Image 1 (cartoon, one colour):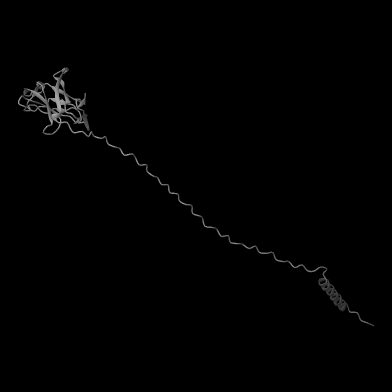
Image 2 (image 1 turned 90 degrees about the horizontal axis):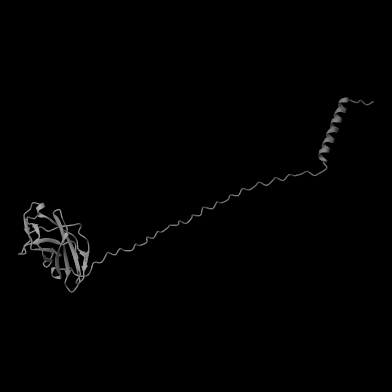
Length: 214
């Protein structure tokens, strides 16, 4: 008579269960799937091109040359001398009043060629011997620049303002002629007969203007 031990039966059942479990694991229906790892993205270093320098544009400003100012040409003729001219004294009664008057000294070019006058002439009175007895007339206005060309036979006028010597309380004399110095030279004066009361002590009582062509 066999003896059945419950402890032995339990061990047999446990061993059978292990065999079945191991057989199930080893006898899978499909092949095992092997996972391929995803490729790691490669980071490529992108080279940055250096900035292209822009060309520098330099603007060149060319100065436009200005036209040279040509000064007015002076007449090429020579200066008038006393020998080239005659002078006439012309009183102006219409300009008289309140102790003053005016007259004109008209100069005519009697030479065969043109000559030139400049500025304001020096006007004064002389006596019969030719000695100067009055002060030189003041210049009436600024001394004009340039030369005035006087053609042969042409005339130029000098206006002179006269003031009565009595207004100055000066020593008075009477002139025999008036002189106009047109050039500071030996032959630079021209004269005309004229009887005028003038101051003989150096008091200035006449004013001469610039030449004016007639």
